[in-house]
Amino acid sequence: MPHYRLSSLLKTATFCLGLATLAAPAAQAAAYRVANGSPAGTYRIDPDHSLAWFTVGHAGVAVVTGRFDKMSGTYTVDPADVAKDRVTVRIAASSLDTNLAARDHDLQGPDFFNVREYPDIDFTGTRFRSTGRKTGMLYGKLTIRGVTHPVVFHIREIGAGPVTALPKPWGGYLSGYEGTASIRRSAFGMGAFAGMIGDVVHLHVNIEGVRTLP
Image (cartoon, rainbow, N blue to C red; front, top):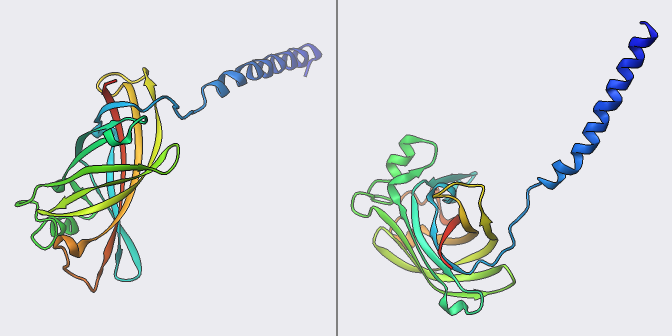
C-alpha cells in the first residue's frame, strides 16, 4: 500500500476516535435518571403505563402469572400530612390475561372472578403509614366478586417530577409507585381447585400517574 494512502487512513482513524471521545460525555449526559421531585398533588392513573398482576402456585411445582390490562383511578399524595393521602383503583376483571385463553375463560367464570356479575375489582385506600423517605404501608379495602376484605400494600415511590418529553395525555408532572400484597383467594369466594392452585395469591401493582392538581 502506498505510504500516502496509509498516512491518510491513519489520520482518518485518529479523527474518528477523536469524535467518539467528544461524543462520550454527551452519551453519559443522556443516561437514565430517576426523577426526584416532590410527589405532592392529586394524580390520574395513566392506564397505558400502569399494570396490576399476580402470581399463584400451580400444581405444587410452579408459579402462574396473570395480569389485568385495564386499570383506572386517582391518588392524592401529601408528604407533609399523610392523613390526607387518598387512593382509589378500579380494575376490569374481564381484562385478565394469563397467556392461555382456556385458562382465562375459566378464571373469568363463576368459580373464580365471575366477571358477568362482578365486572370490577376495586381498591380504596384508607390510611398510609410512612416507613421511610420513599416507602410505606398502604391500608385499604379490596373488593373482588362483591366480597370486601382489608389488605395492606407495601409501597415504594419510584420517582416524581416534570416529564416534558412525553406528549399529552402521558406527559406533564408525573409520579410512579409500586405496591405488593398477599391475599387468600378463598376469602373472596374463589376456593375452586384447591388441590391444584395455591390459596395465597401475591399481588403486584405498578402505577404511573399524571398530576391534575398541584
